[in-house]
Image (cartoon, chains in turn cyan, purple):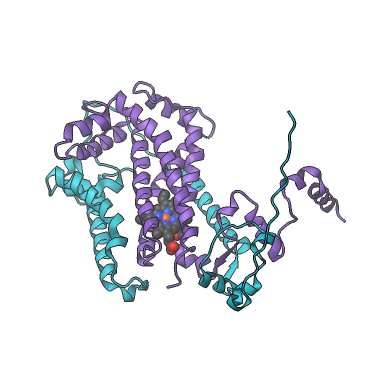
Length: 200
Length: 242
Ligand code: HEM
């Protein structure tokens, strides 16, 4: 078999009516003669904006990368120090027959465990976490009042509500961490010197 | 020219070096742009960024550090996996021997543990900083939703890992945690059966949590992280300035 190459079809450039050419068209190379690939279509106003020199930007190398490097380095040192000097907890082998005096969920779920002592488990264990996650995901679609407002002073309601919610979460978590002891009963930490009933 | 300078130069002029780095050390604007654009790891960034976005006090590096911790956890986690079998009869003694016999085993386990707690903490803080900047507002609504998924995945990564040492803390923390989930209306027993692979925490639970911890949730996290970072670029970079 022989490979016969068909010659490419000649391209014709249709001339544009000079009266219809806008300022941007005049800067353009005819599409058929373009020396570049088409990467994206941008709206006209975006094209105009690009032509203005952006003056509030800095080079990623070195301005952003140096900060990232420094942050990573400091974090590495911190983790190394923690790893060298503080051992991760490990207790006795798991035993389903021996309930330890203090049994707590990991700290990020301790707020929920605290709620468990006030509400029915369906509320504290299922409805609250579902509500929190779904509610959080819905925030951008609920807060539609003033979409341009980003400064806290311009959006007091949102900031106050969110802060109250965070404070509530913090309080129940703190009570769970510090003020709950054997049998999940209320205790004052360090009283009678039995220390904190908490492990990470 | 000193000896060291000559060594330096002959390295930089060698065929191997030049096959690795296509341009000289980035000193001017053009080569700096290329350095970011042509590197597979750096090209996650745009070539230029807006000035306020690189200020520490805007992002506090919280998102970036969450991601850094994720990477640390991946590396230390892979190392720990070499010495750990998810079996109710072996897991605990594996941990003991990691701590006493494996080279840098104790250090690796400690770092893995502390980095995990810190990641959960930083993701919470990152979410708060995003909220207070109103950075979830258009066009960033969807990236906030992706973020909520990432928060959930981060919590699940930490929670599933918590069981693996198979000690008393692990066993009872997971018992309490999964008990709470077992109160889903109508679905209580099925939910618990699915979570635990039985009616109480046991061998099935350990295997389930292990697979979720080392495979499923890391993959889900990687996918959503990719979307998260891609969206930051597509949404026009970091929000602000305030
Ligand atoms: C594994 C967890 C996460 C990682 C690694 C991560 C990473 C990042 C990074 C590196 C940025 C760039 C700016 C910055 O560092 O602040 C960012 C921005 C952002 N993140 Fe996350 N994120 C995570 C979780 C979340 C969560 C939980 C939310 C919210 C629910 C969220 C919402 C956002 C939004 C909306 C932006 C854009 C902010 C802006 O433009 O100012 N992310 N994320």
